[in-house]
Image (spheres, rainbow, N blue to C red):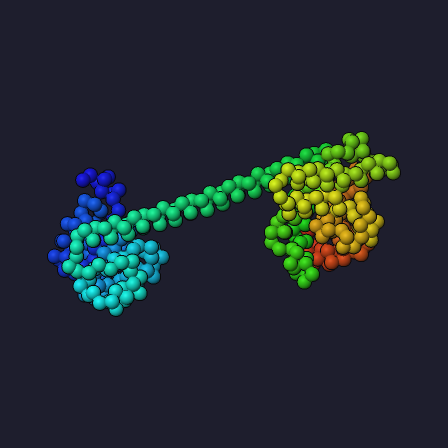
Length: 367
């Protein structure tokens, strides 16, 4: 038989201290399987510690040194060998002997003197069962790996799509620069800090915080519907122009709601994005827009976004103002607590102002 043909055969390890038994079993299985032999328990354990694992072990009970039951127990205690079926070969045919073998982890029990047809049938059965189990395990591992790969791929596509959609709005406003990157990192930092508050611990789990991070860049997606003469106006807007500018919250909400309708079921991600787009201009005291919501009428996602968005606007250069210092922006956020902003969110912000400074520096706009 060629080496290639032999390597394709399944491997059976025979463990017996009697040379005549080894010779008999070897002659019976040779040609049908790749056969390995060991004349002691110690040698059997050495063989299975190598790179090539047998598909089946035929194991004598009465062995010098490490006995058959102990060899079996060690095989079953090792993650590498636990799945290898063990068939005991023994002249001890009492029921208690068989029970001891099964207790040690054996798959079957063959009494000596052997019947060649019975040995061949049982070896074939267990080798096939092992092959089927290996196939299912390999397939399950492949499927799990494939699901993970495709999930990562979908997440990457989702993230890229989100940033492209958000950047589309931002490219019409040349002054915003890295605003998207900064605000989404502000929102995540705020959410992580606010999670320490008992009222928000359940709501701000890891998945929700990640979705908030992904949703934040869509807060101004509705700007794509604002005319350039208003969106890009260098001076102060007139009251009529400001009314048109305010509609970007409604336009953003409606665009995201349209996307939601294309899905088979509800999407927490799009829900948060819709909340942020529609309500991040609301104020805690009810003086914001578009609905004039007050207090906890405003979704938590939008209350987080409000602090992140205003802080970034304060520290950024605009045609109508120079950038404020970090310290001034912090003071203005603090002063807005209870009027513009949720006091709980401001308290969280005050704990991590240095993180905000670092985020702003990391994603600073280039002149």
